[in-house]
Length: 324
Image (tube, rainbow, N blue to C red; front, side, top):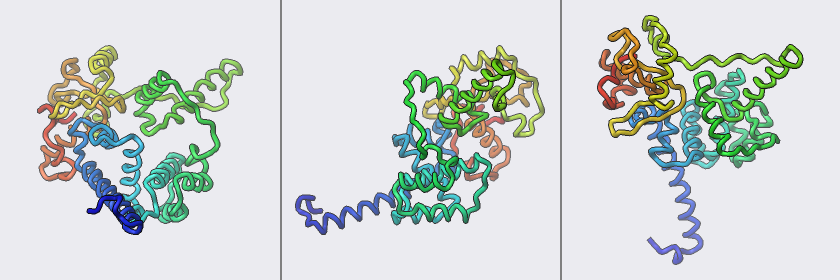
């Protein structure tokens, strides 16, 4: 290969164009690898509660790079032609990420755009930059992409942001995909409700109370007989022992430490040991609580759900294969 300085202008431009195409090809190949990792739930066996945490923590990509690739993963699953549009350059990863956010927000707003309607939206943003894409999407439906509007941006001190993220974790059962903006909007709405009730004996807009974090979703979701609630003091002790973080530890020794969608789990299943014992309780995120149940189901029913269970690998400890 010639030294760059020795290349003619035509060769330099040709090679650069080839590298851009190759970069897109490699990016799409990475996305397909991530899709397979997600299908096998390998990130969970390595101690990551989400694919995003795996991509940033294990692979070392930035938050933005991880979000763009995962957005492309989800959108291309529903609309496979997105892959070809990325390869050709008709859609950038940034535009795909904005599209995925737009469609997800439409769903939150109670809308259910059809596949054809989504294709029509995509056709309108082909060849556009990220800013142009967001401007176009905002014109279609401002509520589905509010960040593209003319709203003011607020900078928060790190200490305030840390508190906001902590609250986001506490509310992750009720509002699993809530952004910082949505959390702040909810807080302001609740505060206004309280103040208006004090001053006027009424509220401008009633807000629903956020339910407490569940002990475990397992009993309801897995048709396990109802069991007595874990005493409040025991729940607090489990939380303190775990320091409010998921206790799952991979076979390589990596602890999950997720602070989102936390649930109290019985190490030895309730069906085998029907009592609440502090030594038998731990804190798991929903992903790892579901993972151990999937492993247990796969071992109880060999051959079922093979792709998502058989490849997960051995649990960090033998009892993690037991059902909740």
